[in-house]
Length: 79
Image (cartoon, rainbow, N blue to C red):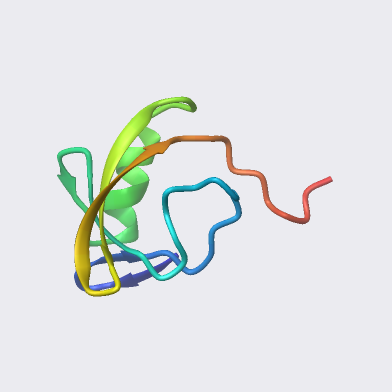
């Protein structure tokens, strides 16, 4: 993820069936505007694995709503 003044940029997606795509700019999650990684972290901290969240992204210049089910983060190199 990268941060820009309008939201948080998704650099890569490790879950093959994710609604999020590399290059998406996350600008809102549920009712919370996302303008920084701190905003995103706060929403995720107050959520749990299995929660369904509505995420508003800018994808290819257009605003889109996608539904995401939160899963546990597993680094690719974890054993």
